[in-house]
Length: 582
Image (cartoon, rainbow, N blue to C red; front, side, top):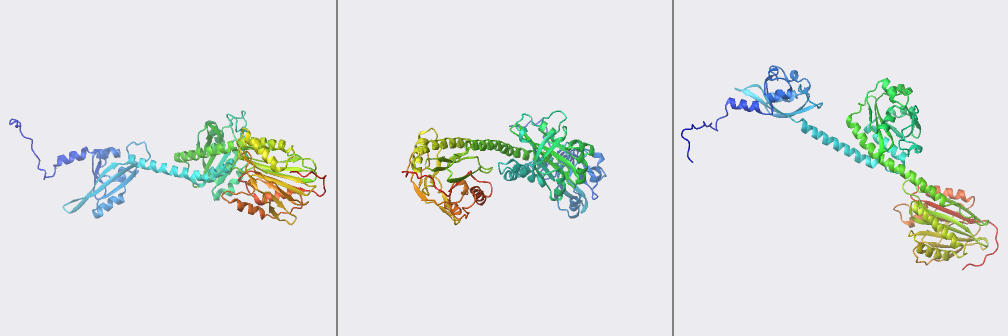
């Protein structure tokens, strides 16, 4: 294509030559980065429009003034600037603070690059190029705070809610909060009698709200001094409009920082405590609701005293996160406690007093439900009085836990009584019972051991359906495990039970028991049985005392499983001779 000869060519700048002063000025004036020139005393010689906007001060008002004079609330890192002047090595640094420009956050952040200026070998000052990095810095801070909150929650997950006991969970929460968020922490819960109310915090007009203090924790230096406010397990009454009732009512945190005496008196359980609070040095409090599944459970109160700072909004968020996690555990514990109590009462009702044995047989029983880590099971025992002075002793364990196992236990026990009325030997009773259960609609197997005592003949006949061997305590304090063939559990329909008859002199004790007495998680059953065989218990004395001592030796703490134990022995004397059962 040709060139329009009538149109003059645009002047071309030599690329090897630096841009003119006007071009550089246009670049500096137009950039969004703040640019400033300082003399050797760090007084402004020049600022571009962008820096003037950042600082919130007209450009002309900078000239001749130091950075500290123009921006007294900004840490401009003058030490770095003087180092650049001293050795000429460029440096980058982040400064922070507030400028004169309006800004919504408490602090702004600027990143600057600084170079020394020389003219004819003489240092005349420095030039700084500054960009604002507040947004990036805020994002990093938010990410770090989120990471810290997640780390805190992860740690709390391993320390709060380790059991299904409400008081234990409350204590774990209080102890975790101290000293992470508070100098003193208390957990108050709605009493059981109010727990199922739609709004348990509502009380008649003018009446104080009554809560149970489930846990309290404090830093060591305050431990002895806060006990004046009460201890865990006590009930505390709160003024109607004080912080804890308001927190429960509204379901929102209540932040009370740096309170004066008047406000502290309104928020305290009662005004008499203000002087004690001041003596301890309490100045701030944070109350957070414990709510799960839309239902209020209680509150957690955190207190700071002495030199500890007031609570921040970040503390409130962290406390809410922790309270939310803990509330779920507390609600689970509360539900479990209620259901476990119902199941235990049901089992005790179903496990009514066994039949009365013949006078020639002394019998004692114990039933101990499992600890808070498991539901009640299907352990049971019974005695059936038979003709000719004989008594059938029975002890069993329906597989599984909960109300269903308890109901099946009652059904199997009734079946046993019906079958035993036919006056059959133990192995034939088990055979008939196995068939009945297998043909019923119930599919829950059960173990069972029977002992037919015959004081007149001085013997006892045994049969086992998948159960642990009976123990015999002799007059020499020796414990012997009976070598009894074990048939399949009841309900399989397989049958195959055998009878073993042993001589039983007066004074010797027959001990029937469920696996909860001896078994330990992760332990071989032979080891568990060996521990029982090594127990030395006197057969003399009352059987109730003997069972109490046995349980204290083998189950010293909360049982891992339900425990049922039956002890029996012949009294001296004889009844009428019975026919030989086959």
